[in-house]
Amino acid sequence: MFSTAIRQSISLNRAFARSFSSAVEPTLKERLTQIIPGKIAQVKKLKEEHGEKIIGTCTVAQAYGGMRSVKSLVTETSSLDAEEGIRFRGFTIPECQAKLPKAPGGEEPLPEGILWLLLTGEIPTTSQVQNLSKDLAKRAGLPTFVVNMIKNFPKDMHPMSQLGAAILALQTNSKFAASYHKGVKKDQYWDSTLEDSLDIIAKLPEIAALIYRCTYKDGKMGAIDPSLDWSANFNRLLGYNSKEFDELMRLYLTIHTDHEGGNVSAHTTHLVGSALSDPYLSYAAGMCGLAGPLHGLANQEVLTWTLDLKKKIGEGEVSNEKLAELVWEGLNAGRVVPGFGHAVLRKTDPRYTCQREFALKHLPNDPLFKLVSQVYEVVPPVLTKQGKTKNPWPNVDAHSGILLQYYGMKEHSYYTVLFGVSRAIGVLSSLVWDRALGHPIERPKSVTTEWIANHVNQQQ
Ligand code: CMX
Image (cartoon, rainbow, N blue to C red; front, side, top):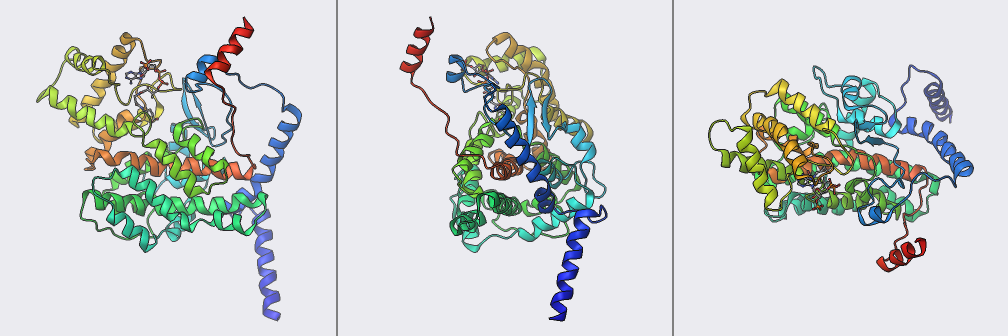
């Protein structure tokens, strides 16, 4: 009796200290618990006071044109400016590189830091990120049936299909689905969504690495080391043990996380999640979208395209004129130049630029990096001359494969899985906020071509 009272008093004192002392840092969940009510109040007030104000319109061309620029989605975690590129919770990529905590001796941000930033809007301290790394390591571990399932996938099943199937199999672990069926209240949905999201992010290195080891290597994989960060652990499981590749992986997994809410993987995760499908189902759906060649699969296509180019060029250097000719060949055959163009961006993607800077620092003399740099000079004028694309500049996918192959990861068909592992951080952070803000099921109105024809006739 006496010891229970003492324990209660200690726990009350701890809670008191957490809420009032800056010396005791809040955990991720504690910080979210503090932040969410203010955001709910802000959104409620906005809806009450300005609910009828117009933020966007949709033309006939936009309805047929993939809803480009139609403002109709709310995503808290990041926003994209056509000229400047992505800002994660207001921070550019160079600002994230400067401000987010790093591994000891490292220079690139830890993806655990951007997870914290996307969820809370705040730059975490080094110890908050270290604790998050430890939390993720604790949550790791796959059920045996998922391990066996991945081991039994045919070797020619695309790694993105394997990723989607493995996530769906893990759905049996969903805390959101379990608590929903127990009747948990709507204002608590975000809690189990956060739990599922952290579990998925924690298990992704093992899922993705096992897919890699089984598809391309001997099928054997090590175990998570709780003293390592998320990216270094992922690299060890994949079979890579280089400090420089760890740095690349940290940068890679940071910059691919999020690209506001309208892109296919983010929008799909949000849409499926709006039916209160749990985070496993929602994220798996997002990964099906990422697997398309106009979206995440482009990173695989770029390396294939670049190696084809290299084969056609042969040994030695190539002139810009000859390179342009080869680019025209592909365009004239009706193919896109993978890694160039973007639905929103109208300048070089800053995710491309920071990878280029990484290459200039670590592999300036790599022949494929030199070729990619030359492609950067040649392709934009060619695409401009062709006159179709609204943006002739490179996107994130134009560079990533070159860096990966330099460190020995040459299996192109795997590259989109790395994008998917990183994208989990962005789309699942958004899903937590969807549940915290109580967003309803998404159900825009569709119309038929006859409806549009009648509508425009009436307006004449
Ligand atoms: N090479 C050749 N043609 C291109 C092109 C490229 N890189 N980018 C756009 N175009 C063409 C389009 O195919 C389209 O042609 P049609 O009118 O014949 O259909 C025309 O230019 C207009 O397209 P757009 O409005 O500029 O671009 P969209 O918003 O429709 O599409 C994107 C954007 C990314 C799908 C497109 O630029 C593309 O196919 N790029 C190559 C694939 C790629 O790199 N995708 C990765 C994007 C980043 C990511 O999501 O990971």
